Length: 342
Ligand SMILES: Nc1ncnc2c1ncn2[C@@H]1O[C@H](COP(=O)(O)OP(=O)(O)OP(=O)(O)O)[C@@H](O)[C@H]1O
Ligand SMILES: [Mg+2]
Image (tube, rainbow, N blue to C red; front, side, top):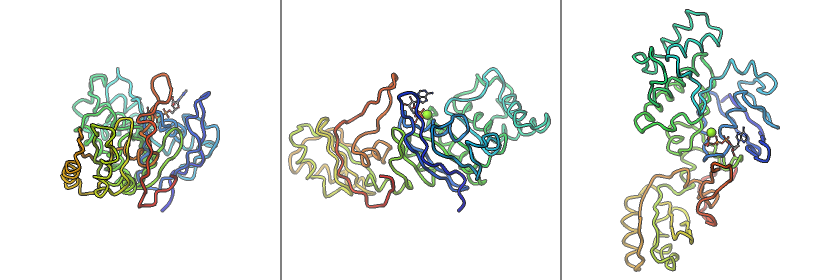
């Protein structure tokens, strides 16, 4: 497999904020890399460096063998970007937006028109194509933005949170569109905050937190890390936390994670979730441990963080300060699958 994107030890600070502290990753040609991380992790900063919009303090980036830092103009011909905030001009129609993009790519007038029509058809925007794009729904604006990123027929496409803010139906529609692109051979690097989305779309996942890669692997490997489906509950009497742990330990694929502060227990129960749920109720009941909020869910980004780092995902709040959820929680979970960069 040939490598389409190669990133080595990228560092970038904004004043005192170390947004990237040495990020390395690579994307094989024709595959999808999902860059997964919470707010403020550094996802957009990575995308900006890779798409020539931001110069890193150090590190190197090659796209299709081209040195992004030495020859940004050449790289711009190879790539497409749909950024986190839409780049469309709202007062223009969808068609006009696409035509202008065509002219920016040095297509002549008639080629720009043809390409705009093709893309409107492809993204189901023909009917809306001739009204101002500010009248579009969020999902339509996202599709138009993606269409605009494809005008130049890029071989490597960057999508920064392509489905954030979309309702479940629009999100699934967008997944279909993205999958089609990949089938046509486009190499894709997309960012997301949802493990579920990376699961559906990505061949490889890189998890970043506070400017560092904390895990790399397939979605299956990350889920194994969590221990499969996650059973969670709160123990009513925090003094019974250890009793609760003993009651569910046989059900778990990994060591149960306890949070003394919130009296929460979280257990990876593999693929037999519903069975585990019934057994948990029975076991807890038989030792007389009262619990509330018992639930079972598919592993999320937060569960991955918990399993890997022992704490929930941190996020930068509005004034830029880093906050942590479920502080002090320690994980003793063991991975059964090799996931690098731990
Ligand atoms: N131009 C800038 N000036 C100062 N700080 C910045 C700038 N751009 C990014 N940062 C900071 O760098 C860190 C990483 O930001 P980045 O936008 O890359 O995160 P992200 O993973 O894309 O987050 P989100 O999920 O919220 O989009 C944050 O702490 C952010 O506040
Ligand atoms: Mg971002």
